[in-house]
Length: 564
Image (tube, rainbow, N blue to C red; front, side):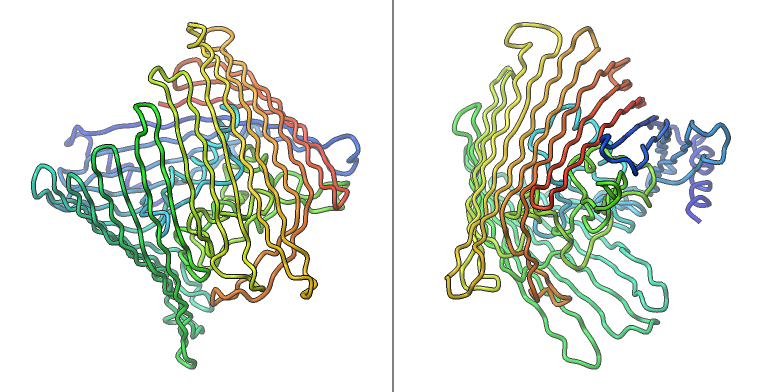
């Protein structure tokens, strides 16, 4: 059905082009090949090769008339290993109809990108990145493109109506409403799932005031299911600016229920508050301070859904140690396990009603971003960037604690700090060719001490992430790239398990002592600013002390890209 709509859209756009001159074509071509194998001690698993999967994305943007425009992305793909058309395919990546109803209202229908605030609708970044190397970020950008992760926007299928009205040169009112269909009913036991919401904000020269609302709900009409779900989140936001000082806040509530006609429905209410202070200490130094409090029953699917589905197995060697042990999704999978096929991806594209699983090896203090339930505390950050953009330094510290005890009266205490830096050595030495050294380090700890009478082990869990990178331009447009990443996790914690009512029903004891390292080196040649070829070797090593599990993955990549 989508291909039929695509055919109609493309033909219509081309035919309209003769009447309306506003017509643009763009896109990209990408070819990716990889070869991966485990170390010699694993004699059962076969090597994995992905020989030159090639995709070509054609983007078409055309004005149908002065009110309506169309944007579509057509994907054509094939595997060059097979010298026929059996592996070729054609599908529609995106179809969007947009335009202006009048000077106050615009609209979008189709595959829309939506974002509100970090507590209402927000696509948080995947874990394991603390200013990683250019080599790793190159693959991560592809992952974000393939999975429609455009900054912190969620790609949904639906419609949105938005606009603004100016009252003066300095005063305006912005507004937006939207509705999407998250899941289609099977007309038997699975209901339709929808999201609707909106926001309205008044902007002035020195301050702004706004209100947000979003609701995820099900519709069981016509199926043999008596329960309907609702999850409302309502918040107010404000900001005040005076000289070089900016104060902002957001306060809100959530209301969640499973409604049934044969039983009393109970609403689960949560709340949050967040206050921010931002100022420029000098021309080159920015300081920010945040205080927030999020209740243990605050539920916001649009902000707490994770990009990675950790309940799925990785595509590459899901079994290791001679196929005797299942392995989890690790950082190297998140970065380089690129799949051009949706069915083979562990990246999550849907907004989930319940809290998603998370992998504690990346830390337990904020697994759902700043919307993580049951957290209270402060976060402070300072950034320095010199005027010539030679050096950039960022430092961040955070001190949080549980708002309420989980399973016991005692509360966890969380502390974390991070430091990132970019240094352009070539600018210091006055070289024209790029020499960039970048890196970052993040450490977090969770602690909770128990009374000896309850016979429960104390919580003490450490996590650290180290990123190092080098971009050395040997000759003009010819770069030597290096990336190093190390993730360490050690200790014990009790992970809460929530039921359908968002109530903590049990706990899973999690104890680990693991080390995960990635060494990666590559050569990249930029034919133009929009086309390049990358040859890359990557060495991945994982060691789990408590289970006596250790494995090594050697990988070779070839990546060619052209954008136009």
